[in-house]
Image (cartoon, rainbow, N blue to C red; front, side):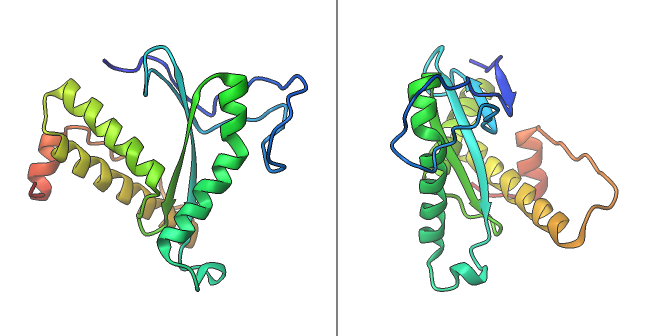
Length: 175
């Protein structure tokens, strides 16, 4: 049930004359997505993910709802990668779009739901507990990244607590 093939920044195959619908499609020879996972959506099929974090309170978005900002960012990533991954890599593509405050785009919510489902099956835990734990971990990762951008790097601390039940009970998260 686990994924033995997960790569970060996998190189995409070089193009051999393919023409894409959108001008913004990534046509670079050294193009990469952020994550590739074999068997995420279906057996022996690769799923590619590309991450974008948008600041929904930036001046350029001040007149837009958060949901609109997330949708615009998802559409941008899809135009850049989807067609190439479907036709050249013969895989699936999902943009993972977040805001700096922790909101997730629609595609990202679907991916997190699927990931929670797979982890809960593998560890015999309730999906709601795993989903809450995942969302909490993602929120804290986004906050750490945002703070790093604001104040710069200090010393590196590596906090990785992957015991879901222990994390949930210690944080007193109710489900």
